[in-house]
Length: 359
Ligand SMILES: [Mn+2]
View (cartoon, helix red, strand yellow):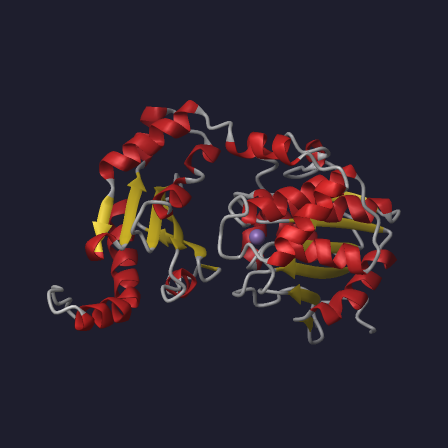
């Protein structure tokens, strides 16, 4: 392994696509005297948790560490020990030997701070579980079979006997819990529950974490859900539901960024729904798309990729330029087309089913 310098003549990037890469990855972590960890815009629990867990482990290994997210740490995750360390930027020069992007499927999702960190880094690393991640660092540990980036970090830290403390353990627990929807999604494997059990055994207060994550819904967010219920759109006989949040309504309700989190999950939780899509009009002329599926045959990642987005088979996102109506109609048309083979075979089995045009 001789890739210590990442000049712009970048040699072939290293890709570790199995846990066999843990030893080499840990070697790089141990060797760094300074390191920065960064994750994706609009961070979720896995993004913030992975930054905190990996950053703190590097610190316990003796490195000088910067914790970054382009949007800082959302209010909902400020209860985590060490969360005050997560910065959107810093006044000092960004001088870190090793820069690691966690839970971030594409380089542009790291925001401007991520790009600057990557530009000045001696070497770069990606640790992620998104199947759409192309591997944009010098060394890339990408394990899509892991439920969360936090689960990859848990396995890496445990197998390589890297140091942990309360900050690391809580952050890993939050990362794993949130990316499995509170241990409810199909990715809630035995490994996930074993990791959670050992983190609780190590002192994480599961009830307290769940209370912070799932019992602090702001009233504004409840009001958005009420509007969503009123304005719900249903396609393919209720198999696909969606809703669009306009800038006008955001202003009317006085929403802040986090308030629209969880709407796609709410839509997905409705009985009979196979795929749910939430559209949010943004200030910059883009529409944010957040898509969820309960049916592995409906691959929302594949549909999001048609719009330059990505993610996971059952949870993915994209951004579409233009107004809300345009974004909704073009995305929902692509999704319906993707979902139709299933509908058509159901229709064939059910003589009463209305025929669905196969375009
Ligand atoms: Mn994740």
